[in-house]
Image 1 (cartoon, one colour):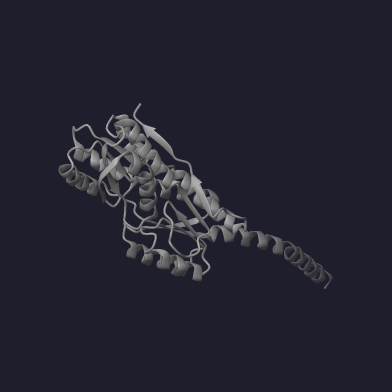
Image 2 (image 1 turned 90 degrees about the horizontal axis):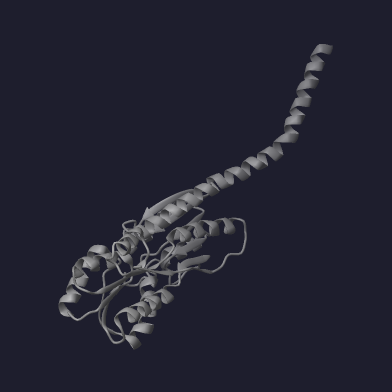
Length: 303
């Protein structure tokens, strides 16, 4: 009997020790699980563009560092598809959304749907026209357009005939880069042609060919992104026409080094992606975040 009581006492003491330890341990496990289970939904306008691939890679890298899961969807430059993709991510109950809009107006309803589910939204490179966004992270596209125009004036002189390859209609980056460009160009240059090539290299080639056939005296082309600029270079061939792009992607930098593309207004897509995930961390920790974050630009040109 005494032996039985002794064994029982040992068991009781062991259970008591476990119960004293378990709340703290359990609390720690819940905290770890909360971070581990946190998922960021990422909707990008297209992954057929090195610029956005760089953003994706940086998001995934920083998220891995922070211990977050990431679900990436590619809108393929289709605003209807992007709206459906975002709704799917909402249904999957992601904790945060990082969105690079295809069209600033068309994607607004999807952002509002996320608001209705209390999912914080961060936008990258392009803004949305309505809906609540925790933070908008982008380059100063207006300033970048001005930088491009100033460089063209410097190289080809005032009142030279120039053309403009515009981005996707409705995208805030298209509006803003065009706005900055025209703030200078409308005073210092002659913009004899402008047409959308939808941020696409193949369309940049086709549109530039058509513009050059109609306007043989063009001295420079400003493209709203590097993909269109590289397409324009193919259309130009051996003609002496200055081409300036926007983004600073790897292909553009190689083209500048090879003496083909004259310049690009270089963004920092990796920094944008990293900043987006850091903003998620700040929101998770209930820290204040900036409503708008401007990532620095720089002019990269042939040496």
